[in-house]
Length: 194
Image (cartoon, rainbow, N blue to C red; front, side, top):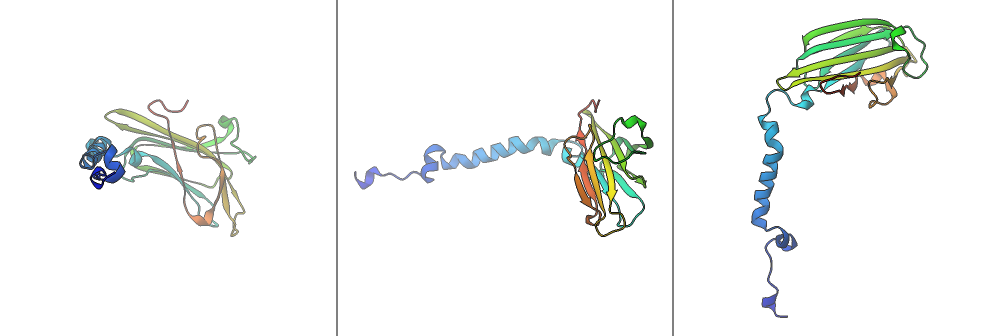
């Protein structure tokens, strides 16, 4: 074979499949298709709207702070319900039935977040948040049981387990010295949990 028969293709092997001048154009078109809906969307992004239950307890404190807020603190919610149930013995799981607990309710409308301080131990925290926009409403919810162990020691921790409304959270232990424990609420769409 002669040297003239070995003709180089621009871009090497890739140039034979996708001609180099068209790769840049294709990349720009793909970027426009992916990002245009985000750029043209009105209101906060779905990431910013995602509500979080932040659990905080200072070491040696007599109460735990349960705070519901958006990932973006400027997102307003139509309705926030934060309820704490007490009056059960810790068995390592969410108590059943929940309607036998003593509940403290906090409901607010048109807020960016809501906080409730509780000395209950163990406790079940039930949260429902409704966000509305022009395309409709989205309901987020979560329900977890907490138990404080090794109180007033360097090993003070919160044990937590999910109840039926928050299956994706999992269970675990959170050292109080680590600061806030953030837990994303579950997106139930427009209908909410049953």
